[in-house]
Length: 286
Ligand code: GUN
Image (cartoon, rainbow, N blue to C red; front, side, top):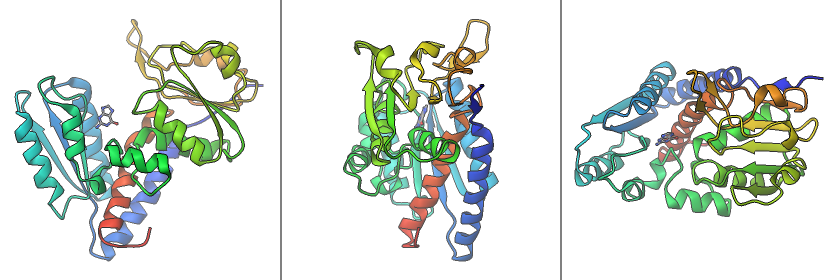
């Protein structure tokens, strides 16, 4: 038997339809969700991501501002812009595209964003709220992973979820979200002994390590849900995930492709966070 493919693009398009309807309903109440994206410098991948975010805003009828700043912008000028956006009523969400140039302290910049506008979910207070289980804006890629699991294989409660990778932007928050969904969660990382043995116990296996095709079928329990967060450029120019997709196809029950799995969900969840922030700012029921 072959795994069911989790079609991230299709699921993402469905959610965007829901967001669009939500945005139209908000407009009738006089509220237009607003997102500000800040890009410093000329990183080619960042430029593409920022362009996609701007396009998503246009498609969904959001107000959008993109601030493209020069590579040599000072930290204090960037902090001044964030302060302005924090106080601007038409802006509900602020995203500073990472990485920032080396002379800027990333942490100082993230800390400066108003937590109510932290649509990336990277502010320490948002992270703390996520751990405690209080309301906060959820980091986009981890939230997208949860949506993909819920909308494909279904219930997470009681399942054994194994997360491979412990980064602040994916591994740790995804583990916390799975715990919140009542999974039993194990986190594996580069120092884990017996990783294969542990991964093989997983009903849900989430992989985010940044190493092309590192996880093959010997890590996968037959029928498991396999979510691949990796996106790696191969020497031949093609993209590959952290999971060896072809190798796992017969063993997994559900699997995300790369590209077209988790990737399309990230910007969609950013848009969803912006709607949530707009509702909270205007005291509209979610
Ligand atoms: N750079 C790559 N991914 C992300 C992301 O999710 N948010 C931000 N702010 N920068 C990124």
